[in-house]
Length: 240
Image (spheres, one colour):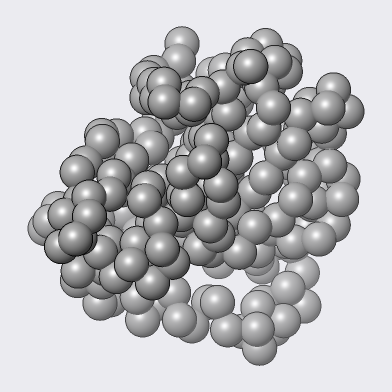
């Protein structure tokens, strides 16, 4: 049986068309032989609502729908850049939206899936911002604005994010051990898969009476990054 695939942090954007092309090629190639593809957030650099008429979003939705049409189960979990992906996007793309976190059985291993941003509890400025933009009232107000206004807000938010990243110590923006252990214990999971931090690796997590694993997905800024899980075989590698 082919491996189940996991990706995150593609940050698709018109400024990096080569990465969009790589992703579309991945969907037409390797992904078609997989039983399932999980996208764990930040598929787009920004997503301003399912009514966005930008060509990039339309191309991606069409490609995902074609993949789903080949019998591949496609799942999407929102990230910090595309948390406004909603039911219209899901319906057009033929995918299933997942809550963050979601626990799945992966080859008999209880596995917790997350985007990863909520694990970065030391980054208090970001957590405050996240609370604001995830509020349903804020989202309703934002989505009521015309597309040009939303695009301007997204551009400003990206600039502020770059400024925050440049001014914040790297360890503050990484996950905390306490948050990781708490997530694994609260959900009875033996494995955690997440993205967000752009630090692809496999980590051993001590939970007192047992040992769990944390797998961090890579980003797609320079090349693709795919996690392949097939039974006990786990492969986290670049693409392209």
